[in-house]
Image 1 (cartoon, one colour):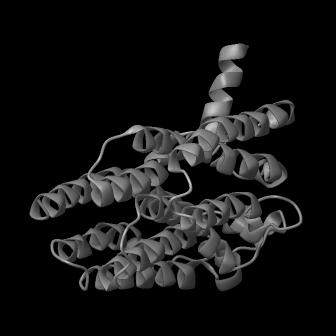
Image 2 (cartoon, one colour; image 1 turned 180 degrees about the horizontal axis):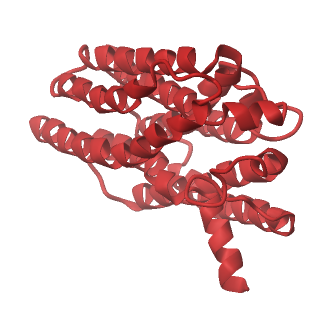
Length: 293
């Protein structure tokens, strides 16, 4: 019984997506400081598990009724949490975030006040996306903006707490990352059009329709690649990393709302593409840091 409960709690944190929040923080911090220290370890741990447990746990609790109608739920793409587990998941997310996140903030100290603003915005976005009374996930376009904030803010926090110098290249890189995040959310919403409509949930995909949303996602990924072209070398090489995502979703260019669940095939490719592009991004970061030494 305890093992099954633990499994459900872990599934609620989307283990396949842990890297999407932990890596941006770690990469931003290491590239800026060149250090492997307690701040890096604790911060990476926070954005690896507690952050995702809080974010997705809240989502699964407040989306329980609609998730019952969604055939994707109940696995790696999202836990179908029994109501008896709701308090457990929320408590696990809050307690782990307070402990690990608190340690992270203490280690960060008072040297970079901007980091306080960033982590506040980041955690607000985590809560506001799903919780009753705010539900940014039901506000078309704002849903994609908030979702992207979930993934970009760890990188911004890493930069802020490391005291990074803001310049055009850095802004272009973050803009590319933000567009990638919006594209990813928008495309991910396509597969849920029918269950969301049945549950009365609005999203960027239910508002625009399946094929327009797919095309918008492709546009965002294309723009992300273009922004990378104006970053310092070897950043422009990362522009090609948009191509696998575009190719993965291109078959759904004209998908209808009625057949929108077919986009799940592209979404599954997307989940694994993150590991591939993350590996290549790491190689580029290594090249970049060696150039600076």
